[in-house]
Amino acid sequence: MRKLADLIFQRDRLREELSKIEKEISVLTQKTPSLNLPFAHEIPKDTDQEKPSDSAPLTPQQKISLFYDLFKGRGDTFAERWESFYDPQKAGYSPICIKRSGECQRPYSLCKNCPDKRYKPFTPKDVEQHLLGNKTVGTYPLVNGRYCPFAVIDLDEDDWRNDAKAILECAEKLGIPAYPEISRSGKGIHIWIFFEGLVSAKDARLLCDSLITLIQNQIRTEVSLSSFDRIIPCQDVLGTNQLVKNSKITLSN
Image (tube, rainbow, N blue to C red; front, side, top):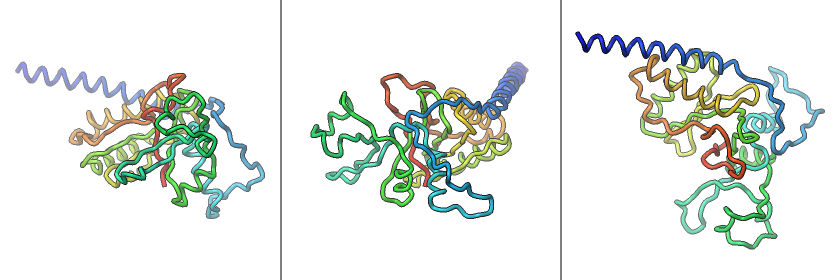
């Protein structure tokens, strides 16, 4: 009887906790304030460009503009994928420094702590090159150190398919638009959630975390979500002298 009483107590406690989470999700899904914060680097838009109609197919330039607006994030810098000339298995992403194109002769090993680096801003041209397959770029979501236009749930292990299905089903039930994208390796998935405006990274991360908690405790209790890797952005606030550690996300393509 004591075990039964303990289980009933735990059940009631979980119901109360889930009720709080559902309320938080309801608030966060409606919380898309128009902050009017400037991006670190703003590219002037062509005001004369004709807006696409709902029925007309998008032109190449309109597709580039759409991708740029969706994935821009922090605009004063972006990352580009590189592969080692000596070791094909060694690859990564690094922000692009304008000075590396000619005037700087310092070894790449000194770039991290260089006081003179000048990062190349993110432009629609970079999006175009990414979509054409000429290079692979990644964007940094944190704007002004604490706001973001999107959040991403990253799944990476063997059971990512089932876990992703559970997250997408839960998001649909709660009215949260979520979009899956198979990762570059083909061994994982990114689930993108875009906001109508900039929201605080803290709220965006809390929304994703609440979604995962709700799945595990109520909606799909049989799903372990063992493939869960991280939520992007990876932090609530970016330090003044911190670039973008662990907060880069490759553009969808």
